[in-house]
Amino acid sequence: MSVDLPAPTGPSSVGVTEWHLVDSTRTDPWIGGPREVLAQIWYPAENTAAETAPWMPPGASAEQEEFLSELGIPAGSWTLAPSHSRRDAPARTRDGGFPVLLNSPGMGDATGWSIAQAEDLASHGYVVVALNHTHEAFAVQFPDGRTAPTQVPLDSPQEVLRDLLLPTRVADTRFVLDELTAAHTGERLTTALPTGLIQNLDPSRVAMFGHSLGGSTTMQALHEDPRIRAGVNFDGPVLGSVAEGGIDQPLLMLASEFSPWFDAPGWEPYWHHNIGLKVPLRVRGTQHMSFCDQQLILVRLADTGLLSGEVRQKAVGAIDPSRSIDLQRTYLRTWFDTVFGRGDLTTTIAGLAQPEVVPYP
Image (cartoon, helix red, strand yellow):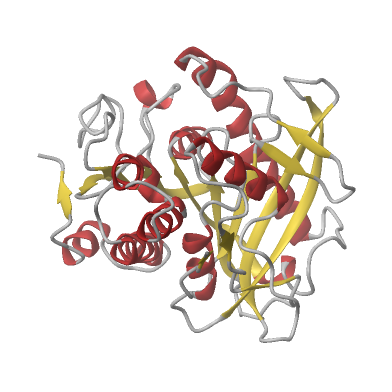
């Protein structure tokens, strides 16, 4: 049984590449030595015959196999169709460059679980830079073949998330943004990226989005780095100093229907020191894992009888998967289009009103 990835909706072809970076100024908190980060990047590409990339890179694919095995899905009973991205295809040229969207995945997740979002954004003129948070992610396979497995139990207490994982994730984020900016300006030379990519991004237009702990990372990164001009939090808790300090930048928050965070401090429309626009919304029919590619995969498995309806309901809710992905793509794209354009964000979100999407009561 094969699961298909919905095609991107934008006019541009999409390229994908990986970028291995080493931060010699930081020590890896789990194994020592310089901190290594592997970014996966989707971008508007020239329409070429370059090889189609798989849906998930090796680290994410291994995580997917483990995840489905824990749900009782027999190995070899499913496959993922290829992505719609061309590996290392030359980047499109655009005067002024393409805006950059940083992306942080959920706790323990490798990049590759939010391809439906990333490809669509790239097809509409964004460069999406997703971060593997090494030794927290399930597995990260570097270009030289080394695999860095996770060192973090999924049942780690919230103190570990707040005091170790979150600061490491934010430092990874700021480091990759530093490297993108240095490469774009010529301060740091790189031949590791596809033709035209570094020249055709705009590091003065940067925003960020993330799912679960990636949403928490997005909020804390906004708090610490003013270069990141806006964010989207998909069903993530509010952790770190942002909970008290707030942010200046606009933030869209999309919660699952029964999210424990929606009524928690920081998700309400206002908090003490926050001065940026905050729009908290809830999506009916969704669960926590609805805001990544599991929305597609688990429903397809349930439809073919490989997964029970009860497990599907608990993981990704009852919402139609195509509708769920369409809502995520539309809200992401429209939010960032408005941030980098001249529209009013409040008016934009009001105009996007959908029956499944309800504001904070």
